[in-house]
Image (cartoon, rainbow, N blue to C red; front, side, top):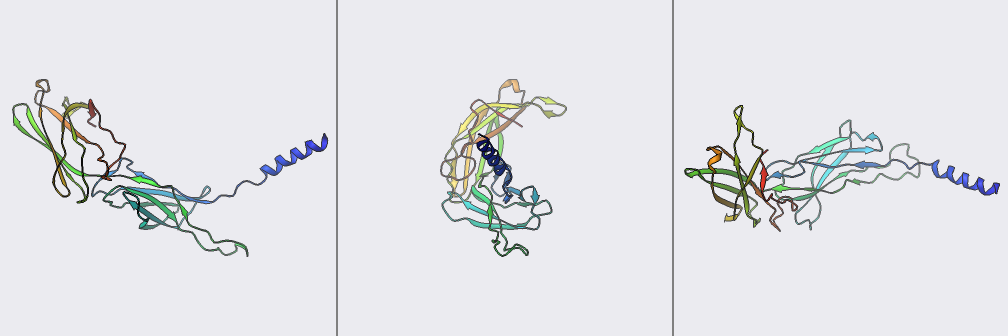
Length: 245
């Protein structure tokens, strides 16, 4: 009995005496998560560490893969980590991409011993990066309390948009010189029509309720077109009303 207890106690000591060694790692975050319009820069940043220790002065490489994500990873930029191990990239992308960062490994360091191995590359997790169509949104008055809202899209020439554009028009409740209404009810859905390669337009005629007293706000929503590779595929437009701010 005494011998058995001694063996069990020894096993516990051996199991806790050798904690796992820290290893280099690198993170990657996307800002904003919802994506940016075509032509704008997306923020990609992260930190390289070895356990709790920042890895300063290390080379990191941004690698991307363009929608439909079937091709090879391509290097899009390089950077050197700062004193906190941090780095940042801000590329302009023309479609949705997958992105990752490679922390470049180093050879055997001096004093590593005769059996030390070179430090290999370390990859971050893969992040989705969304690029939305660029667009302009405007309206014109057709007659009393009737307006026509127009949204024009710019996309790469090989992109096809198919989803309708939804428009929402709400009151402008003025307080201290600014509109304070927070939501706009659904007003109309319009087909998104191709004008030429890379150019689309959606138009809707909307009657403004008399209770708005001639003051209104409007906003639009355009869901992901399957196969377009532009925007978040999980985006859904609200059915009844949209947030104005």
